[in-house]
Amino acid sequence: MTTIFALSSGAAPAGIGVIRVSGPQAFAAVAALASRLPEPRTARIRGLRDGAGALLDRALVLIFPGPATATGEDLAELHCHGGRAVIAAVLRALGEMPGLRPALPGEFTRRALGNGRIDLAEAGGLADLLSADTERQRVAALAAAEGIVSQRVRGWLDRLAMLAALTEAQLDFADEDDVGDDGQAIAAVLAGKTALADEWRDILANPPVERLRDGVRVVLAGPPNSGKSTLVNLLSQRDLAIVSSIAGTTRDRVEATVTRDGLVYVLTDTAGLTESNDPIERIGVTRAGEAMAGADVLLWLGDTRPPRDDALWLHARADVVGRRRIEGTDVAVAQSDPASIETLWRQIALRAERLMPRGDALAFRESERAACREALFAIDDPADDPLLVAEQFRVAIRALGTILGIDATEAMLDTLFGRFCIGK
Image (tube, rainbow, N blue to C red):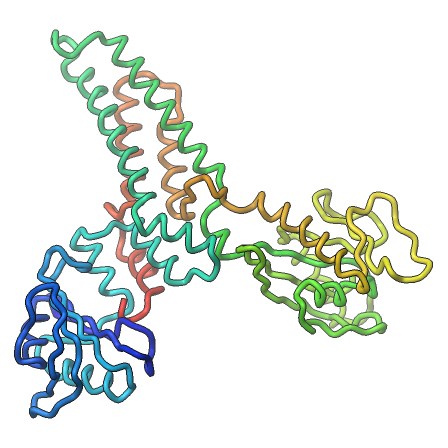
């Protein structure tokens, strides 16, 4: 195993630059720079010198003997001054040492996984935590990174193992006195199956945690000159779309991302829905239809009934003199009435919350939900033949094991750890 190093803190310049070194030669490399190593887990100031003896910096040096470290290996940290030249000089000195190389993206965390310091669910939570933009994303990611998901899955695996053992005992030793009554054992196994299946259904009923990151797609649609561009500007509080009295001003989708109360919304303004001989305008209408079909929340600004039953039907341009409100519309909005825009946002938020993971429920990532779905499919069968039930448990155990990385493939790992920064 080679020894790796990287800048682990934010990009220079910064107040401090933390350089991590992990692997079998980590302590020897730091000793070559600092002459003397401090006691384990004790910070000491040392002068760092290159191979020619030139002083590079005076830095705090810490060492952490493995395996009780973040990576499961000998790990050292150099807390240098955060100037670009200082960091570059220390990294260059490390790179000149034999047996050391710069770390790949996510390699520190990948070594932690390989050395059993974390499992795949915790690594996925850490990846989400590094990219979290909102408070709700942070809370969900931190739960996974801290092992809440892993604890739940390990509990399921323990219960499956016990149920599998009971089933195998009936298959192999049913005629032995100490195995117990065959009917009672099978009844206990089937009850255990049912309880697990119910728990997995609850998990699958809750939206995936990716929903918090991808956001809620809010699409504004309607005929030309119905006020879509004005409204998208009001909702986003920026001059996103061109507003004009000329029909067909908006010819393509215009998008903006807005964060409110911890939720991400992707607002999409679309071309007016109309019959046209203009080929460019027809393309815009086609794209508007595609956006409407993929909308989580459709805001319909037309005076005819919405094309979807779940759409929010708006009485747009309510401040236009003589404009009569259409019966059946949900919300009246007016450019001159900021309160009407807030009312609309509240209606959007009510629909958005139904699409988000519940705050009181454990949210799983989509890949983890797929494993739960496979496990549920395996055991969600009324069969009571011990031979069939034993096979069901084996399939479920294999499926859930992938959540923790027990059967993780290299492709899965490359996809996950490619999201990390170099020094993580």
